[in-house]
Image (cartoon, rainbow, N blue to C red; front, side):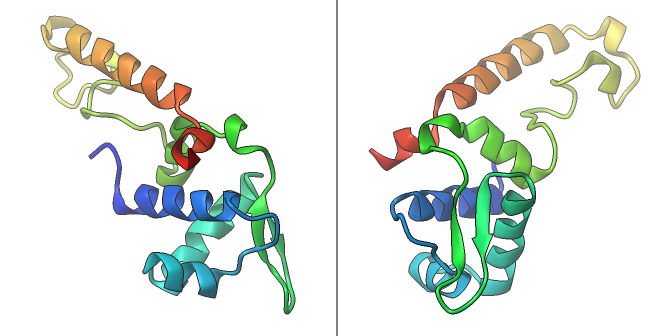
Length: 133
């Protein structure tokens, strides 16, 4: 599957965080977006580890974006969320990754690879800022 619930939650939470200049805490985001708090906390921690979010502790703590929304592509969000490059089909990202080991004889791979490249390009051009407007 291209985009999982985890990626959906990541995009929604990053968009909400981007709309404010003050840190937004997990509890508030969880209630606002109707996402389980523990699951959301893990997602946001991953984005903090990858330099997308800054984390602040304490009473007024929470998360803010570490970079402007126009510098954060949906492709990057998806790759961090899924912890891998996204793939429409199991074999579309690499001919070497063919699950049947018959890639050299495959008539589908060239078409699937072109589709994957178009999707990657499309998601790479859309930024978090685009979602906010």
